Image (tube, rainbow, N blue to C red):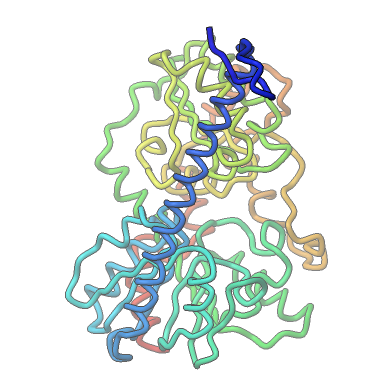
Length: 414
C-alpha cells in the first residue's frame, strides 16, 4: 500500500494506483526532458566548436565546401566528394548538420570536416561563409533561415532526386543558386521554362547526371540475381513511399498492404520516409509491432542504406523519387499507389511541362488504386521488360557512369 501525507498533518491516506502511475509518468517525462535538453546543449556546443574551427581555417584551406543536411544526403554527395579529392588538388571542407553523417568520418589530406548543427549556428555559418564554391543538395537557399553569404560565393545545387523541379519543390526553390547540376534533360527544360516564365536571369546549367544512380548500378554488379525472378515465385517487395497526410503509410493503407503481401507469401521490407517516422510514428509502430517477429518482414528505419533496393524485386511507392532510382538503376518495376499529386508549388502549372514522375509511371511500373487485388498488380509488373527500363534510364539521365568525372571537370571552370 502506498501513502501520502494529508493536508493539515491529519495523518496519511492511500494514494490511488492511477495517481501513483501519473506521478511516476511525470517524473519519467521530466527525466527525459532533462536528458533531451542536455543532449541539445552538447550538440549546440559541438556545433559552435565546428563553426569556430571552420571559420579559423585559412581561406586557402576551404577552396570548395560541401554542405550536407545529414546522413540521408550522404549517398548523393559521397562520389562527388571523393572524385573532387582524387581528381583535383583543391582543399575541401565538408560541413554537416548531423553528427552521424558518414561524411564527417572521411579522412584525406585535402579534406577537413565540421559538424555545424541545424539551428542558429548553421545559419550564422552560411551568412558569413567565405569559400569560392559551395556545393549543396538543399533547395530554398535564401528563402528561409539559410541565406546566401555576404561574401562572394558560387552556389552549386546538386540533385538529390530525379523528380521534376517545378511541382514537388516550392516556388522559387532554385532562384538563388548560381549553378544547377541537372540529372537529365527534363531538368534543363524545366529550369529554362521557369526562367522564361518569370523573367529570371539564366543560370549556369550543367548536364551532370545523377551520381547516386551510378553508385546503385555499380553496387548491383556485386549482388546475385534474385532467386524470385521467375514468375509466380515469392517476391521481395520493398515498400518505400514518400510522406504526407495522404501517403501510403499515413493513410493506414500501408498496414493493410503489408498484411496482404505477407498473406500471399511474399517477403516485405518496410522503408518509410524519415518524415513519416517523425510525424506518423503510430502508424509505423502499428505495422512493426504486428510483424516484427515474422521472418518474412523487415523494417528499415534509415533511407541512407541501399541493400534493400538491391534485394527487392518490386517497389511499392507513390510520388517518391526513390521509385525512379529503383527503375532506372536496377531496371526493376514499381507499383505506384495512386494518391493525389504531392504539390508544394501551387503555381507549377504555369510551367507547361508535365512532371517526369507523373508522365513515366505506367512506363516503369503499374498504377494501383489501393482497392484492386495487389496480387494482380504484381503479376502485371512481372511483365515489364528489363531491357526497356535500361533504355529509359539512358534516355532520361545524363552521363551514366561518368557523372563524377563531369562534376570535377565543371569545378575547374568556376
